[in-house]
Amino acid sequence: MKQNYIYNSVERLGDLLKVGARQAGAEHGLQPVHVEVLHYLSICNRYSDTPMAVTDYLGLTKGTVSQTLKVLEKKDLLVKTIDKNDKRITHLKLSDSGQKLVADLLPTSLFMHACAQLSPEQQSDIDSSLKLLLRALLTANNLKTFGVCKTCRYNQQTDDGNYFCGLVKQPLTSDDTQLICREHEDI
Amino acid sequence: MKQNYIYNSVERLGDLLKVGARQAGAEHGLQPVHVEVLHYLSICNRYSDTPMAVTDYLGLTKGTVSQTLKVLEKKDLLVKTIDKNDKRITHLKLSDSGQKLVADLLPTSLFMHACAQLSPEQQSDIDSSLKLLLRALLTANNLKTFGVCKTCRYNQQTDDGNYFCGLVKQPLTSDDTQLICREHEDI
DNA sequence: ATTATTTGTATCGACTCGATACCATTTAAA
DNA sequence: TTTAAATGGTATCGAGTCGATACAAATAAT
Image (tube, rainbow over all chains, first blue to last red; front, side, top):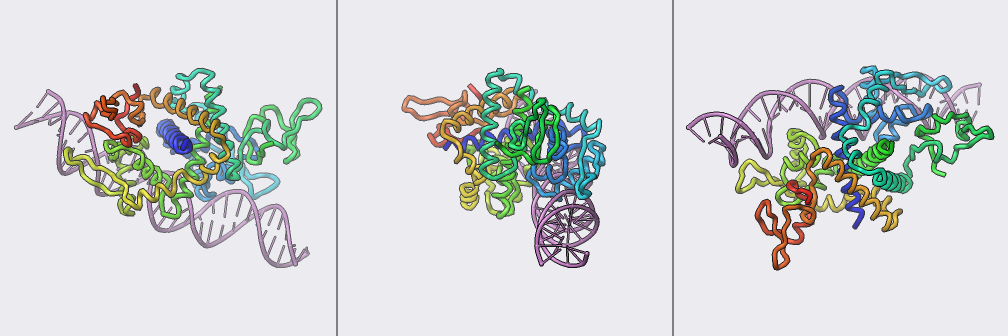
């Protein structure tokens, strides 16, 4: 019956994080989901900054996400540009104010207060436990993993130490490989 | 910078749990928050089954919660009764169909699939990590803990092995002490 | 007795969200 | 090469969340 305890804890943690996101976004007229979209765009790579990727990440419908993005665009927090090769695709880049806002708001102070109470060892344990659960949840339900290149089966390292993605057939910088990707697949 | 990783994981876990709750509730016309309210009412004690307690638990406003409860009442999933001693207070009891629904829906299948992949030891580790983080989040921000009697400073055990709450001055059964309470305070 | 606090509801406007329909572009098939 | 299917995205509608404000009723404090 450990499942029930785990479920309860995750549910409650999610609520509390949402409370923090609500507080953080409130003074800028942002809903929790707005904060989360901005957050996602700040940690995803250039192949994953599209409305469909956001849709997959949040587990909502594309229509819903489209509306949310319209709000963020109107607030000048992100800029839309059309892909050069595929004109159906829109890229979403955080504007300067959008980037500043994310850096300002996240992680929320409510959450940082909590971490301040935890030792580095405790944080490490929590981190790995969360990742373990998350991975189980994703693989068991065939959901996209949204991991970083380092843990992706498409990631290759060239002779001179640079990175290369075998899926999009493009070289990647070290910074690139720290970002999450919608095409990510576990090794 | 472990905080960022932890934040990301919790955020994502929260999203996925919500996806599960959305799927589970959809066929009954329920929003994720509906599912969560029903869940709460299925695990709280008789001093904590009020709109204000739900409000504190979810971190929303009482007006919002009032509307949500109205929907659940209209669907005959819960029954409202007025407290005998304090006529301002409403008690929310799950109806038979409400109880059956919670038992049916939770934990969501999306979540159960994940747990099926984890060993008992892994589940134990995850459980304690989650509780550790949750406790830090609650105490660091002076939020209500909503724990069970066993971990409450008001809980007393009488000579004959029965339980007694020092706050409400009432005897409790063993079953009672397994439920969460809005007046709970860590020892 | 009077005031303040607590519990809950009602109403408003902004927004989320899913469902459906629709358009433009790209890709696959014939 | 023409046609059909799939993909990415937007527009619109209705139900519902959500916070803010205002309000009523019961209780507690003074």
